[in-house]
Image 1 (cartoon, rainbow, N blue to C red):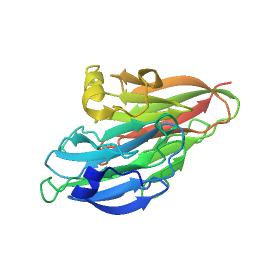
Image 2 (image 1 turned 120 degrees about the vertical axis):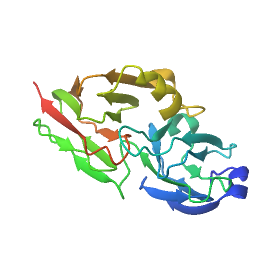
Image 3 (image 1 turned 60 degrees about the horizontal axis):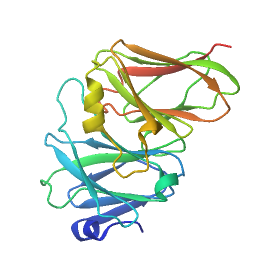
Image 4 (image 1 turned 90 degrees about the vertical axis):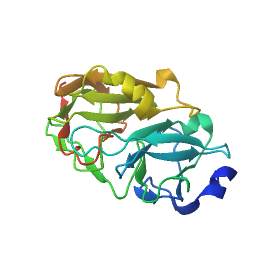
Length: 248
């Protein structure tokens, strides 16, 4: 099992999850996500408390890397943290996430793995129709479609609170921020999207910011699955939707 010795000494393995399903970790808990595909995966973590909480990520018996998630905001816009990894490059078929025992008692994070293939449990999975009808986000969400050969317009919409999400297509990931200031791009790079040592090159993902309340991109379907998953706080994701319209 790919879990560093330092992590074993500090935490207790809570479970092993093979389908990316969401789980909750408290102080001293750890979970290992297994069966990772050879394509980009996002380990998405949300803070459940009013205190800044740190967690560790470890794979391939390397020393764990520590990250921090800001405290939950009572009102307005807040984000989870997404650690992007490409197991096809790192050759890591599993990854362990843990909350150190040194964290404040009562610390709690929700964590799950997102890719073209999962998560399959404890998250809303819904197919996006290809006729322009909107799919609305509801808490922890993952929306997917497999468009056949044709041109399509994908639109992500947000209401009052802003929307940030991950768009997976092939081996590329777009981080899409809607109804947010342009300055959020720097925040996303430094505090929300982590790629250190993960096999994700700078050319493997783009951060796309639109201050307006919708973002649209045209793409050509190739009968391969695409996925969009919000990383806005769970209590704000109801304020957004996604649609795909065939245009030719």
